[in-house]
Image (cartoon, rainbow, N blue to C red; front, side, top):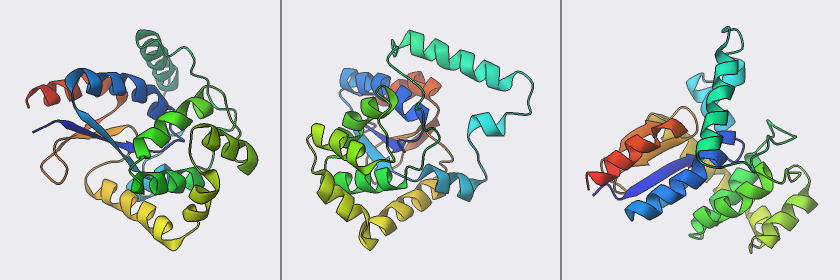
Length: 206
């Protein structure tokens, strides 16, 4: 049954924040499950030849401006007025992603992502400062020291790299990518926060 949405996820993507809340509402409304798959977006871009939209589209007249207009429309539609572009964007997310991978290994990946997204994309927490980031993680109910130590292990580093490689092998090239369908079974891929209606249609097929 198509009762599961898997979100390919990296904290560095503004769209990871923007899609999260309406996607959470969607899965609750439909009775579906939400999983996160931590990847390293910079690595995904390298593997696919992709780039952030503001870089990829910078030489296309009017494209960046239109993308910003669409973002503002999405923010207004879903009442995401707390969103603020992070002052360190684009920041290096590798340690955060490894910590998310470790949390996901504990079965708490969704909780970790949901707890940290507001700190990053609403409060602008200094993600490159271990003390401020650790405080935000601790405030969310996680053991920051444990997650950081595990993020430095070969097991977690290799696990995140494998996640990134596998996502690309499955067709992912950016965030947000969503796979709808049972774990280990046939899934349908959807890219972009504007595809939520299509995700809901796929879930409705049962």
